[in-house]
Amino acid sequence: MRAGPKGTVKVEPLDLSGFPDDRAMRRDVFISAFLITPRGHGAKLPFNLRDFQREIIDGAFAPRVRTALVSLPRANGKTMLAAALGLAEMFVGPPSAEVLVVASDQRQANITMRYAKRMVELNPILAERVQVYADRLYLPENDATLLPLPAEPGALHGHDPSLMIVDELHVVTEDVWEAVTSVAGKRPESLTLAISTPADSADSVMWRLVEHGRSGTDDSFYFREYLAPDGCAVDDRDAWRVANPALSCDDPFLSEDGLESVLKTIREPVFRQLRLGQWVTGVQSWLPWGAWMQCKAERKVNPGERVVLAFDGSASGDSTALVGCTMDGHLWVEGLWENPGDPRWRVPRENVSAAVDLAFQRYDVVELACDPWGWRSEIEAWAARHGEKRVLEWNTATAARMAPATDRLYQAVVTKVVTHDGNADLAAHIEHCVAKRTPMGDLVSKDKRGSPRKIDAAVAAIVAYDRAAWHSTKTTKKRTVSFAQ
Image 1: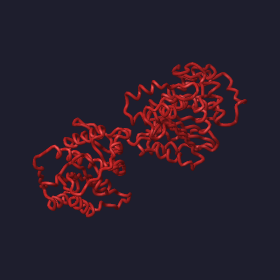
Image 2 (image 1 turned 90 degrees about the vertical axis):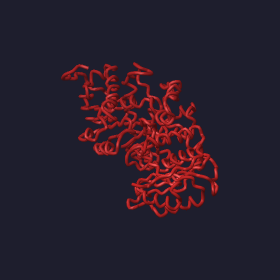
Image 3 (image 1 turned 120 degrees about the vertical axis):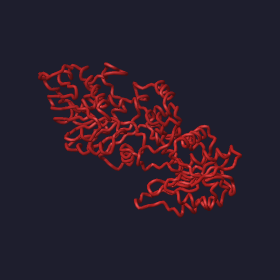
Image 4 (image 1 turned 30 degrees about the vertical axis):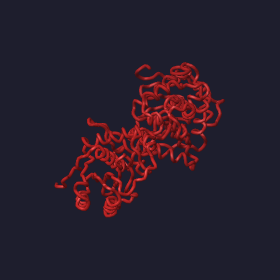
């Protein structure tokens, strides 16, 4: 690319008079006729649209479609297809077509730009018509532009795109998506096309749009999802081919040995998200995918049995949990109080105290370990009623205590030493836990500050299991605690 002003384009505009009027077919014909694969499988050869890519084009550019979402695992040619569609839009789209390629940052957006630039360079017919700048492509004969932009609201305003390509929607925030949709739709025909792997959390723009697409209620919204079947084994080769059309299509450009190599080097939930296209709760999750439910057991906790209880409380926003653990390592939920979504809701403290008292009556409670934040007066009252030797303050914010306890339950789960009652709420709280690394070991935390995805029951389970394990190996008297300020 030569720096400085560009010379005047002297060649005649492309003769597209024989192209079909259908939006999808025009783009299909242009890509097949003029574009060269810039790298990888089939490099320097004409761009070979596979059937699954034609399916995406047919659906996204169907009449009256304004928004399209394609959920597709990595290494299935998303960025290459985006570059091809961007160039096609410049030539066969409306006059003064404007193509915006929006990615997580400028560097990522420039990858699509580089593919498009290379496609232009590889075909002399295109190279003598398209002016290549450092930050954009420009087609004088049609006054068309391709411009890569970062996913920042300020960068998106002031445009009038005929095609908006959002690369990796899973990293896009609500304010960015609002900026994207606010500039789209000004033309008689325009399209916002998002192509992405699944997000690592259901608390995301992409999940909301996936749910919208799955509902099938919006004719202006095209949705196509490539993913492995639910419940499949992570090494199921048939599932790999279902999720990865580049592996199963004619003239495939993805190989099984490549996926096999990746599987050996990344965690299972990440492989499922990025390479199988599955929505996995908490890709950065604390526990391996499916490990918790494998520990479910039909175990009855008998009246009078020696147990440990753990309490993690809140005032309003978070949950309040009372979880028990037997001396042989079986966890169950004794009580869980969660905000139903009412901003005026407060934890029913009397009900919580009643549940604690009932548990002391029902079981031989060796210890009740309590996180003291916000509940000190109740904890003092429980100690007065049930004995200070049996009620213990256990501050879950103390990493020196919490990290070893977290590791203890982790090891018990992955080795299937611990069991639990299968409580759905506890399972959800466990799934919500993200591993937070500290010098003392991993701690569990929410996926982000203020997240509605609660983890309080999981924290109580960690404490209960740790204290039960401690008591099961000790013959000394139980520790005492002072509630003095």
